[in-house]
Amino acid sequence: MIRLLSKQGIQTRAILTKAAEEFVTPLSVASLTGEKVFTELFDLTDEAEMGHIQLSRSADLVVVAPATADLMAKMATGQANDLATTALLATDKPVMIAPAMNVRMWNHPATQRNLKQLLEDGVQVVGPDDGDMACGEFGPGRLAEPDEIAEKILGFFSRKIEKTGPLKGRKIVVTAGPTHEPIDPVRYIANHSSGKQGYAIAEALRDLGADVTLVSGPTRLSEPEGVSVIQVEAAKDMLQATRQALPADVVICAAAVADWRVENGSDQKIKKKEGQLPALTLTENPDILATVSQKGEARPDLVIGFAAETQNIIENGKAKLAKKGCDWIIANDVSPETGTFGGDENSVIVLSSDGEDHWPKLSKKEVAISLALKIQDYFKGRN
Ligand code: CTP
View 1 (tube, helix red, strand yellow):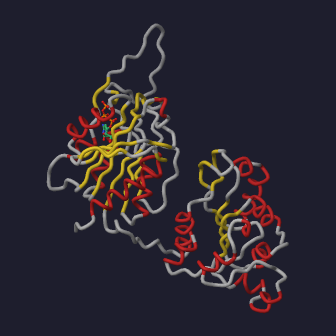
View 2 (tube, helix red, strand yellow):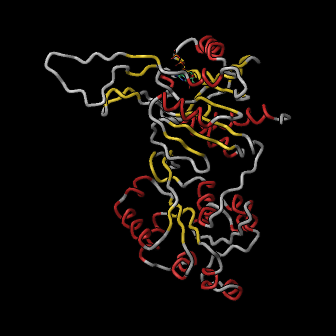
View 3 (cartoon, rainbow, N blue to C red):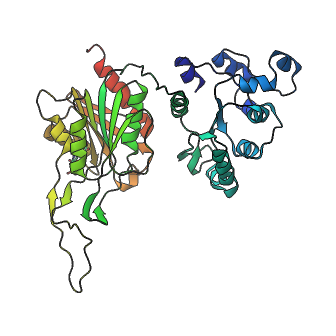
């Protein structure tokens, strides 16, 4: 986070708590901030150089990252028994916290009470994110990603992260998640896609500087910072939103688009009738990947699809590459025993006119980063 901020021309001065010193040394932090790191409340040299009151006011914004349950409790009750909490109590500047703790600690009524108090006191909060935690549990409590915190800090100063990176200037559209095909206003047909792979791809491309539009079906994921997100429900809305996002250099169709929609859906809730079952007629949905892949002036340079298969992965993947007319197919095994659908890992084979590229089993984030780097390679040497 310090590195990201300093790249954007923001100067950081750090206070380390005793707990923080268990994870990082003052020296390593000082090498990032380029400034002395403050640790002790009653250090005479520190106090002579810059008293804790002056320290608390020397910045434009005070950020607590990570904010533990303990520190939040201290802030909420105004305790000041070390340098960090003293500076927080003495400051006349805005304060932002990025909480990080075990999911049960985060959900505990005491922490939630403290959070409410801090929000009432005008403290800004970023995160926590949902995810796997060091303690092996899953849920809200994970520290927001450094770029998310940096983005919020820059946003506070009404600035946006200036895009830099090898994909700077490249416009990339990513589709992600499932689609919901309505039966009536309260019912729909859906699938198990979580959207995680598509979201991770959007984030990895953003991190390489690309200008990313994410067309997302309904998911439980939070919208990534620094990406334009368009939320849609049904396949036909996804096609429309994708078309509107064109022209683009690259389109990646990672969504699990429903193949069929209900043709004889109802505008009103379908009521139960004794002895009668509603007969739903299905009709085919537009194929977004095939539509975007069609030859023409506006065709993106690179169109990438996924092939979710449960058998004959390579054969079916190659058939899809030919049928849809895209440039690369990321083929993956989604049979239930692999846990790919909704899970965090993926083993993929990249198919293209160059042949087959087998990747090892990777987390969805790693697949996303590898794909983003492969796209970067593709554009190397091109205008
Ligand atoms: N796709 C799409 N629009 C559709 C269906 C699929 O854009 N209406 C895209 C998906 O995003 C994916 C690729 O096509 O990139 C292949 O999706 P997949 O579900 O594996 O294949 P289908 O074309 O649906 O074929 P099948 O279900 O018969 O395997």
